[in-house]
Length: 368
Ligand code: ATP
Image (tube, rainbow, N blue to C red; front, top):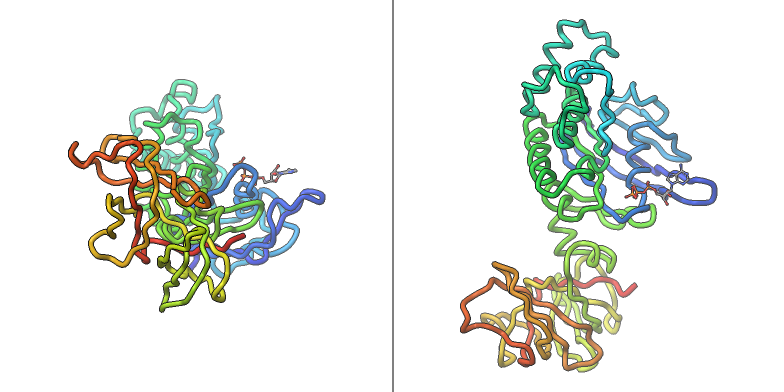
């Protein structure tokens, strides 16, 4: 295993009887950008703190490359940490702040100064070396915090909601900056956020956490298009979840009967190996639902059609969203999204439409 890969095995943390992190296995590859995503209290910060060595685990191990660092103090791990509150020293200039970790590592003053300047160049702030933290904006302080972490070139950087305190525009700008630095430095990054869009745009893989355990680990597309559970489908963006009965398996797809009318359709089995007759749910993202006026399937693709009455149409710039009440009362309301076209195509409230999808655009999720 290369030196900047990070792996944990059976890692667990309890506070009294409360399980903050259930025994967890995870491998972060060398140079990977992995995001811990999940609702408040799901254990993201707990896992990150265990990786950093800020709290001791109850069980399990942490390895960097082949080295067991489970009980090593933070400063003996080749890891940098950036938190939401920048924690810059107020009485030091920016350059002194950035040089501080080098001083701690006994780097000479001249070398430390040169490297601090280089780090400031990397975050595009070479002109503020002599200023104090209070003289900087939130975004600038966050970039200084990044520079201070990068200056000693740790092979792994852990970031806990580093952009949480910034407004939307600055946040988006900083997301690009962090991605650029990740690309240029090839550092392994473990990033914590509860913002699903941020996780989707920045990560090689997302580790979605729920109640102290990993709910699903995969690429953003894996989690978005192939969620294994209802929790994942719900957490990442809008979804349509249809109750269905599993009929037969056809390769990596299954045939299902949807709702009480049992309209037949297909979906990816998605790793679930359930016997015929099982109750399942089928998930389709809004943009994968095709809207037709006469129950026809889109482009001749084998499709299932659910009929419904339009309850709301929202044009959100380039996308039009159509909300629909299925005629089958056992189905929940559905939403379809498609590129906004010209007026002639416009769908109107109370129109009765058929929504359909191809088998490869729908996935089975377990009915639990
Ligand atoms: P957030 O997004 O709100 O930061 P999180 O996913 O990072 O949440 P953690 O901070 O890891 O969640 O907390 C997980 C659970 O462990 C929470 O219910 C929290 O209250 C609990 N917890 C964390 N630290 C302690 C502690 N020192 N003592 C007792 N309980 C704790």
